[in-house]
Length: 512
Image 1 (cartoon, helix red, strand yellow):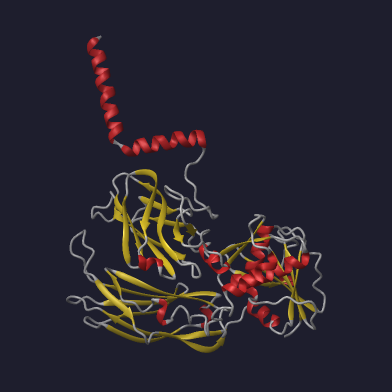
Image 2: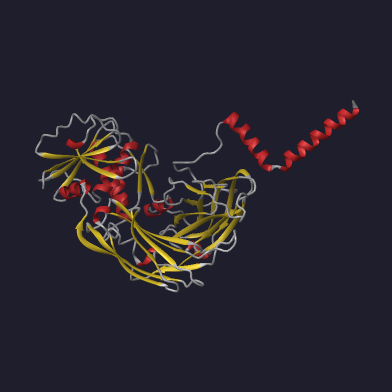
């Protein structure tokens, strides 16, 4: 019996040692018990949570731009970034950047989460197997405090356990940067201007949703104007929310000149010298340049007729050659196989109008046919850049779709009258402001006009049969489809009897 007892005790000790040595098993076991009693532990926010300070509560918080958009790094390697707008009227004396992260890492991963501010690496966190939450505090320098904005870059680097080369293409590590991450600043006097408050809130503003019909119209028009300046307006019942009557004054402080205006062409910003498109790229096997542009958001509706491609490529060893491929919206336009030793490419590539959509992207991919020696080599480091002569040439064909047609009909209007149903909720009102800003930014309210444009804001489930389409006016529906694209459709062509999402019903005089 004594021998049996000693054997059982040895077995239990060995099992305990194995369990203790396996941190992943402990972590997963703890998580499963926690989820059993308290529900799921992981939370991926779709809304903005208040920043959470580490240690002593001090300073005013600056939230990142677009705090409602999740920042998730998935796989090795992966990259993301966040932008924090610094106050202008109030000048910070000191501060720090706090990053809250949730990590999920499988056993065998050797990796690190790198954090850079601007071009300077400021922090690194080793990845440990299991699931954990970590918070990091990064002190800001004097140079950081004087910047207009802080661009924080996240890089997930490492090696997984499955590849013989130590380079894993799976998803063995996932890191979420929590929305509670923020910059905390100290001042001699706290920020008081509306401009600073909006910047520090991540270019967001909470507005009280009024009950009065006239106030609702003015609130939606001002919110649409703010949206066109990159400020996200969310209607709320919070007692600290901005009053709708103060929105126009807020707009005057944030964008007194209504911003820089629309670009000349849809691709003007994507191919601007400051866009980063022409920067030198370093890679091993291949690299892709993306030129996205959306039609209807520029002064000119001209479609690009051709891509003038100017490329500089590094020299390769022996008989290795460059292969360059150009596509438009996933359709092959051109492929060139350069001769050995050829390091320049000058080409004019036609962009068919028939391949264009409301949203477009031109992709230029350069790769090498260099034969790799051995199993685990990544090949030589390569360099390439697009030259300043690379450009999209506008052509004679103009982009026309129902949305553009509606905008053309709205052009002669002398003003706007917004009719908001009493059933529209504060959440639906925020969506309506987004639609209105995309349809016609800088729209002005009216009391009376010779040719007003009437916009009805329709909630989900609104009855469309109540609106007659056999009148001398044109009735248009404006909404977002399931892919987030803005859609304009004549009411007569809409085959549903009720709305499935928030919609605008535009009633305009028939101008053809």
